[in-house]
Image 1 (cartoon, one colour):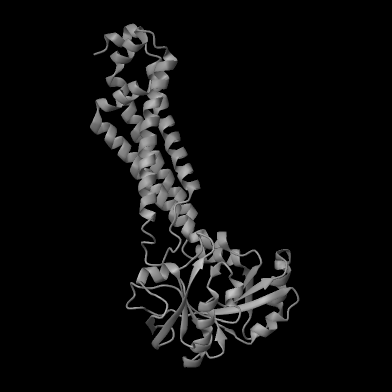
Image 2 (cartoon, one colour):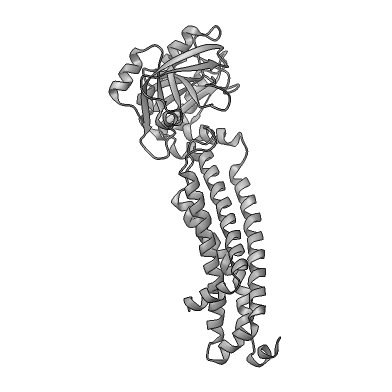
Length: 377
């Protein structure tokens, strides 16, 4: 029957091509929405279960004293503490932005073992006051190599800053962010004119993830009623709250996806209804030569499923090829990847739409009375 299905689809090549194209566009859009959603939620997926984030209770942009590190270290159940500060400088211009962090070189590498830096490169970085570590994706973006000197214009911290690239880190997992730029917090604190002795946030490792809720309460109570009160949460919760700052991406995706697929369902259903009406006499002939109503039903549904499969597969393939070029946003979405689960979901949705769009025309075709159908013009 497949040969018969393909012959029928080839009768109206332009109409079939446009219908396949509508599926391709819809699935390409679906895939892009899935990519964007996963990109914004990736921090939650890769967050460490044993890490907490401590920020200023007033706002993330308000700092905390570096002296808090020793007090955090002394809390029972805390095994490691490190810190970082957002730098916010500009490389060349605003179109070449990327995350820049002034880090605690003593513990930052151990806190984030998923960011793999060769030992010799880390030692070279630690020995150079103006040293920097960059992610492999960032290095590839600008063509940087170990030993290059990189100028960055300070925005939050005014002035001309220059750094020596002493190492390149890679992600231990495919989803790890490798677009960051690290340099010494000591270098920042030494040169800045305001805010000396303050850091942006702390990351705390706990001995047992099950104790996270208790330690969150303990940490915040220790700094309660101080000039710099804290807000502590798990790394996953922190990443989720950061993603919510741009809105509910999942809701956007659901709303746009529903509109797209309902429209696709209506278009495909209408196309198949027209195709069945045009072939009424041919379908009657098929039934006259021995095709059962079930066989005619299966024939029409198979046509819509073939269209859905070809169009959906084409749209998803184009989306996958698009991701192979890397992040097109210049660092806004460092994780730009179409997962296999989204591909399977997309194909399932396409076939479901094809089935629903073809069911009514197929039922109509299967119920044709041979004599009545042959009389139609």
